Image 1 (tube, rainbow, N blue to C red):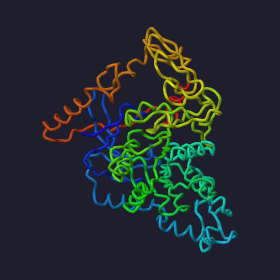
Image 2: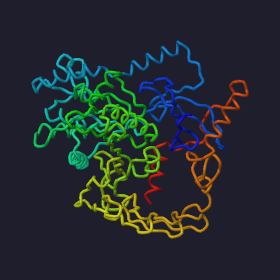
Image 3: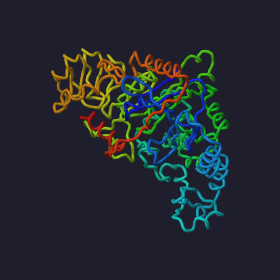
Image 4: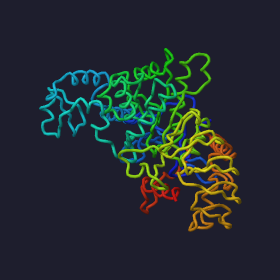
Length: 496
């Protein structure tokens, strides 16, 4: 049976993670993901492959129906296009270039801002018409500052930790005894580890950066960086890169390893959880018999409103109250109250009691919950927990028998708490199951979901395996809001 996930932006589209090693076609970002249109009533629609990393066809226009037979000519053209979009150098070549670049005198060290490339002397003339700048030794140690952050919100937007948040994370990991940090999409954490090692004031730590931005490869050796797509667990360097990960995860001499991941906030939860689980499986196979049944220690950094989805995929995780800040994000920065606070949190399978949050920043220890919480997150004796998710003090509703946001009020017509000006009674249908219409659960937990799917497959089998003509999925003629606009509206509603 396939494992499916409902797309966050459209309850009628599911991601299908195939079991059994079925090979997916590839786009420039590696193996694609399989999607399925789900009709009301649970009837499965036609499946198609699309890019794992980009949510907009303008960024990656790969599309293929699952049952399409692709011609050899088209396959060759696709391979040629994928090859054209590969990085200009292999990781081995990048490493060799960096050693040569680091040995150059200061006046010969140039960085092409247009190509985002460290230039060797023989390449200066070819880039003479481009914007270039001198590179200092300090800049070489901070590539996240030197490189221009990618800013496409639908594919590869890069939001970088503030130094304050990066230092907190590293201090916490060091305090917990970890000496190896697998940095998945966290280039700034990788930098800080290397900088601290050079200072030689603390016990050294090892780090490996896995990132889809190949530009970082020119600053690190082969055992410090791998070109990697976290949405499909794809190593662009093939088996050589996979071997680098395995070597890093092998704990020798008592060096404990931990993974810290900071995916794009618009990323789909289930593919990410699947990739992280595969990393954990690799780690588990390399451990002693005493640890072979444990999961790899992990920290997943994501907005708090994804908590239900993350815990559904990874039940051993807990959401911590620590607010992660970003340098180049207009909203995700630390504030004092409400919406001025960053909504980004730490999800981890490390014991919440052991992750000490700084008291001087407004955190305190709740002895009942046995974890550190935000100062306004007051413990509720009726709920037996500290309920706040967004940094405000929540209130208990006796009718709903749970704590809710302070701006919400109980609506007798809807039978639940909501904003005072909510469209009363108009959205009850949307709150229920897309599969059977029940208001008691969502489609992903519907007990009839697999029954509908099995019946659908049996119906196709009875039809003699004939393909049924279906109308292609098309957008309505009216102008739709962009995915970013819809997510912004959702975030605003959840923050009220």
